[in-house]
Image 1 (cartoon, rainbow, N blue to C red):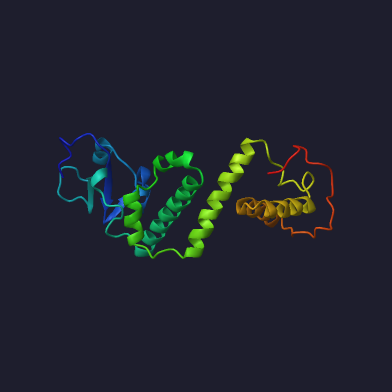
Image 2 (cartoon, rainbow, N blue to C red):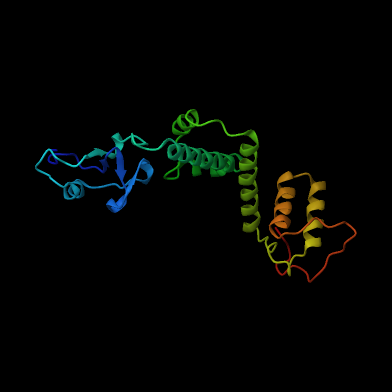
Length: 214
């Protein structure tokens, strides 16, 4: 194995068709989880540098390494692909809800569109229910973030915002027509383990400390 005159780049170390993890602590079949090593580190980890007997160890430039090593288990690969597609779906939903955030698609570690399509070809199409819920949740988060920036908050404090108060806000926003607002108020009640109270039940407790709720 010639370790001289190699270009300056990062390498992945391979043993028995699995990648070394960072710091040579274990093995993985997933490139994303593999360690990146300099040429000097590769040389230090080879057991018999001047011999052809390398105990099944080899190395490969990072840009030439496949996303999944030959010995990667199918279920591990499938779970990893599903997670990447799910992350992309959620970020696309945020970008759709907030066009000004389209730059989020360029964050490090995010799949390119071509990579996403390739992943989708290798994994069964998610059920429309799951896609719809993921997209709706991303849009809800974006709406909540905008409202927090405007000074809204306090829903997570039953002292500041009662069950009846949240219920009335939910009903008021049904009339206003934005399903995102209705979904967010329903989420708040759900996360507090509460129910939608009857309209006749009046507001209880002191006024909101912030003066308004998300």
